[in-house]
Image (cartoon, rainbow, N blue to C red):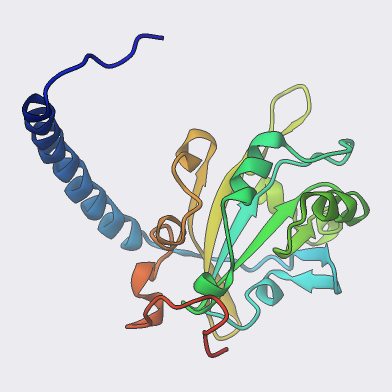
Length: 218
């Protein structure tokens, strides 16, 4: 691997300022793209999906935990696997404390096809406390993974894809607003990055300022 060339401080500063101008162009383009993402139409979810989690059976509406938005991490964990996907595990490691999302009226949950009896020990091994559900019990109520393209038929069997889907709740009605998969997850995982995928964006809690995670009024 070749290292950067050595220059004077003045040369470095000039090169850095030129790069900053390009970074600003990218930042502004990202803001415009985010505005277009929030203007995407949404689709009502009317299937009665049933998941299994730490408190037993749950519906998609239950996963909101009463909040307006829900971010679902499609975690690759096939029913026959003993452990979850390393790449998905690295992504989940970056999520951090959920208090910041929750204070912005947004819930987060991981969903996998593996039975909950396999999810639970792996979750404990990784030390994660995020809500994590199995979709394996939802087949008779609609296949969540297939419907949201987190699992695709390769012609030689079902293949899971890492991804994130966002949902919006209006009373008891649930709407699908956005999904991204595979390389589209690069750079995601931060609070701002996840909120930027949602329909309400970073303004989901109005003027709520960042606080220490144990100082939010829940």
